[in-house]
Length: 316
Image: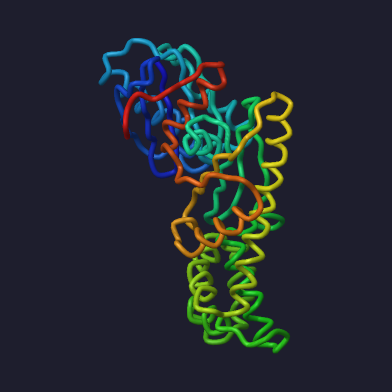
């Protein structure tokens, strides 16, 4: 038996499959981000979901359990969570990773390819022909997150300031930023940003308005969007070159590499189309929506870790 768990900040989602890839049960439990709920409570919720799935499938032993944990990108956090999950006699083998990795495995169904994530932040992951996980970006808001919601929002604020000081050409972003944040004057941006220690989610939430402004022909907004998508594209190109070199060593040249696009920004049609058109001019990729959700990604991850090929038998 194989189980995959997406342990998120809102809820735990668990899927249980047999070794032939047939889904036997799906369950949920409460929030399990250890940074918010604590490790003890997060472990309790994960166990609750897994035990419920096992009971529904009349299963007495789970051979492989993969867990993707929100708020646990560091090895120390994953080790701490494994400690709090013990004892767990129902489970034979357990592997814990962060939620970004199970998102990658779900998006690509555990196969070779590249997954771009663009939401509040941004990161690009890949699974290469050697089954290794590779990454570009993901360095956080101060030194990375190119093309993300935060990147677009912060660049819009900077451009609004420059427009007010007549350093750049006129842009709709000046009034857009003031209206969005309910500022009477732009000087209010200083305490807003610095006293709140760079409020990422609030700044990132400005991104859809920046994208709309670009779509409507505002030149400064277009420049911001083009720059952000350009950096995301370069990260994909870098991974593409690395993956192509590895495949050539194995005499297994890719005609096209599977590319999936995840995260809230790619739900925006203009953003999705603009990025897709840019990247297709640079590399040979087949763009698809993510194939499976993260709980199944956790199942793909754990089987990949133990060298097992998992093929799903269910249509989701």
